[in-house]
Image (cartoon, rainbow, N blue to C red; front, side, top):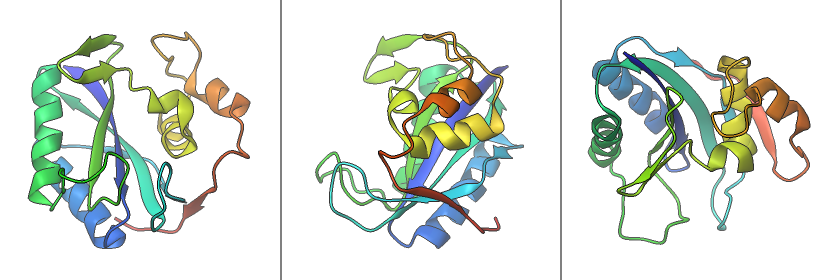
Length: 162
């Protein structure tokens, strides 16, 4: 059984799509550990603010099959893939970690680079896995978050019930 961490983001009908994404992930993976929901500005393009969170769960699925399930959930919730890479999203589910696997194949890179680059990924990850260690840096997510330049992005936790 592998422990996986997934980032969830939405800036199109974000309340409904965040709830629907969590529901679909529960159906696919079972019990989930959820971070708080955070509101962030769009990064890499001009767009509406996002809701972001990180979700942890366990799976018996192999890594590429786990990633395929996430793509299927996105597609079922209206994810448009024909636009630019950085654009608005109904639902964006990114596999961040699959245990401590380090992988770069078939378009899947783990651990995902956004962990170290984006507050909207690192803060919720540090919230639910503070003592877990990044497989490449050997540093805990709590430590990485404490050292992160928090002036680079606007990010705030919000009251949100799922």
